[in-house]
Length: 169
Image 1 (cartoon, rainbow, N blue to C red):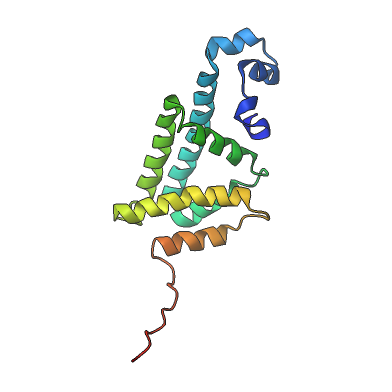
Image 2: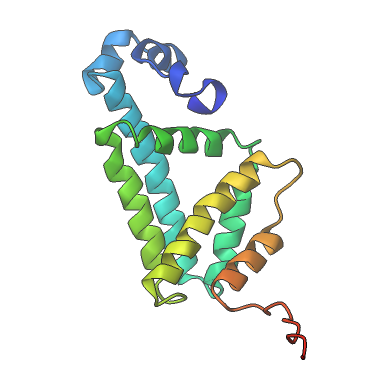
């Protein structure tokens, strides 16, 4: 629902209509619109945290993460757009901040074996978020191999560009 119409489309009445339920059934479980937002962000966060855990246990964790990032645009990006809208709301809604922190801590833990230095890890974590957004918003299909190359470079696992020798003299 958020993917189609943005956060503004989310209301108890709209959820009830989409679920073919009486509005009272929705308000029983979600007393406020903010409760709906928290539930929506928690649900999408839980899904990504499970995927991140699967990536960590994979034979090629960074390759799996690159695939997950690229898959974010597979449905036309509706899910990723909804998730980013929810995460942006976390800056203004303290009840959502816990979920943003939960994601950031999970990405940090995932990247720790690849980037022991906290500053390097923070940069790589910011890149992960940025890569999700880039795969969503750029035209054309996302390329998991390109995402992987970025992760490898940031984590110093890929080839560094040749640095020309300084001029003599």
